[in-house]
Image 1 (cartoon, one colour):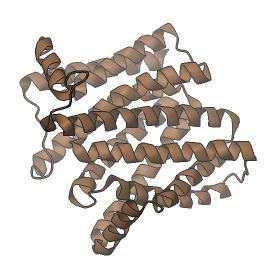
Image 2 (cartoon, rainbow, N blue to C red):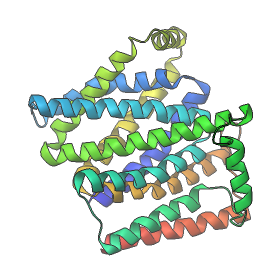
Image 3 (tube, one colour):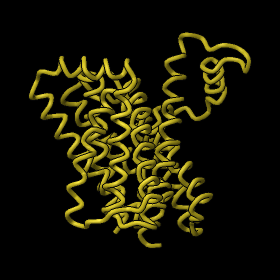
Length: 322
């Protein structure tokens, strides 16, 4: 059950990421502002308590609030990275790191382990996701990659050339968001192990809402938010934003439910399925709207992605029959 729910959530998320990238590039140019408007709607999750009324104790409440605040911080770094580059570059970087960090965190803090077959499927899914996502097909160019890394990060004691500072920021924001994503997923899994799903989900969303209110105490961030609010005059843009957030909330709830049912590391290793959906979606949209989206799928790149998709399918099959 958790496998089907996870795949469906990743399918929805692929579309949400493309829409988020469009909004961040064309409409809302501040990751803080975007995270604010995403987080402010967390308060409406309290309506879900009608299905399962539950009130946490003080210790449970503090843990729930912490999870919600971690998720809001994750969104800020995630949107920063998404704003700096195209979705088909950022999503794979973050998605490749999340299952690795999740595996480590879940092993250390939850004691979760994988069987031999599941562990093999875990690595196959990650490798498939990498092949689907990366554009570099010249795998022999190790020296070129090493030189590029040195150019970006500079010597150990030296500075970083200004040309590569945006790349460094992208990498750092991507790594940070992956760490926060993994931390959130493992913490929320712990919460679901000790609290009812609906109640824990709702109270953790309160943490995101409180985090949003804290954003307003930072003068520069508050100024950016209010300036955008004064300039946001298009009902069409607003309805599009609300539609995207509705689908995002649906995917988020489904993914949290899957985490409550299954292994955190395995669920995050299925990010490769999300890359596949994302590539297909971007390819289709770039064909019809090349002005807004582009995706290079030449012969070598296409073959690489087919191999990656095959590995993802193999990993999924191993999980289904295990």
